Amino acid sequence: MSAEVAAYSLPEVDAETLRATLADHRVPVLVEYMTEHCPWCQRLEPVLAAAQPKFEGRVRMVKVDIERWPDVEPTDHPRAVPTIAVFREGRMIMTKSGMIQRQQLEVFLNHWLDPANEGLN
Image (cartoon, rainbow, N blue to C red):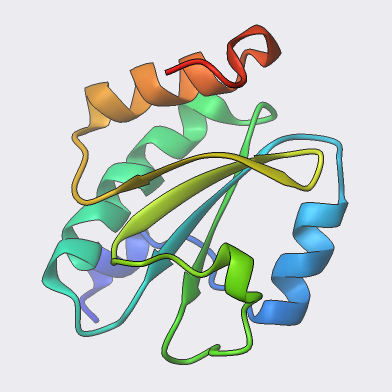
């Protein structure tokens, strides 16, 4: 991994840490489900990491390598990578698979971080 890519890295968590993170209800959590060999995952992570400062204190962002940590709960396991999932109070409220640009990510997060939008597309 180059220094440039490392500078844009989200913290990786294992299944146990993910469960603890989701149980902490202070802020919503965005989880990037990814694999090391996925080129789209490698392209998405800098987008997520670059947006992270804008959402500081409003959302916590982590990543889970689903090949490295296969014991992630089956209900949380995505069908494709990359997938981002937003959790509020331990409940998954929305997922999005595939690549997303930074501006789209910001619109997506602003929408789903508002509790009034839960359950709306």
